[in-house]
Length: 410
Image (cartoon, rainbow, N blue to C red; front, side, top):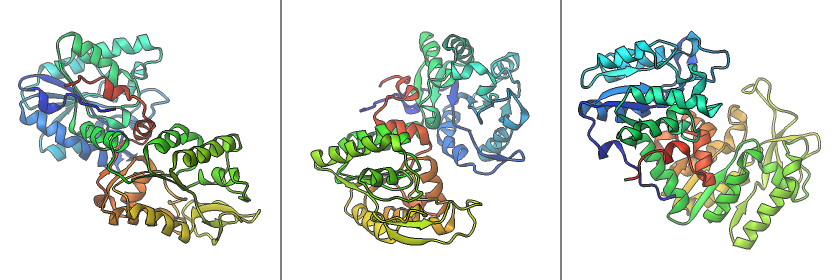
């Protein structure tokens, strides 16, 4: 996975129309952006292209758009936020057709250094390229608006969508560059190097609810890492596979044999596979999720039949922190418990603190782990926080990401 892709530093954007696929899939409440992390993450690439005298055309999806184009999922609030952050007007093309006449006219009127934002790409059902041929037409229309293309949307790079990977075919066909932006380059450098060329000892921490979500990641990381730490809901399937009583805890009965295989594989490869030694339990899942809850701590091999494991216990937190201390590279994906609840966030917080204090390169694999680290105010203590949950997981699986591989090699 040694990826040496063309970046925005490898071509001149001067006077060129450059289409940039960003990840502006930001959370909105009553039309207001509640977290602008993804917008801020896109700024370095946009500013670079403006400074070079490029005509910068931005595109992105927002939400799942299940009920067709609608104002609630319009990118209008993003255009407003971008204008404020760039200190210049970002012309927003509100046309639901995305690449229609309004877009063509807006692009024709551009001067060097101007910025245009197209409407939500998912307003065109062809964006998600089902059927593939329909996606080709939308990709071709996007390519017609530009001379060069830059993908800076790591959070969408695992999807072979029209605006993510298919468009490169048409840009390349007319002699244009297909590059990655600074955000993508950083993700490739950190995640790619961590998995393919880590400074050892390499410790990988996996949490979250389901084993099924991380089957291939566990398998791949057992080969790459020196120590694999398992926490969160997925740990209980491993404990069950060891023949332990896990009470009412989350378990995936279909994956018991898989967990046995992984434990045998770790032993065969001489890798450490760490599982919880104690567990924070309660009578049931908190309702509401952040409401008060009565908990106790028990040994992980003796969870009472009427109790549910909802976080790692203090001894486990210590064990995991100890493993992180001696590491030189740490990748973490998935919380240790129900971190949305203050009482059940202790395990996740202890792991986050251990990473913050480590002298290792620390990489947070997006999604809930990123949310947890930021929520705990420890984000700035990490070497890298990935902007893509699903994309970073697929990267850790060793999969080829369409958005990355579609870019030109240097």
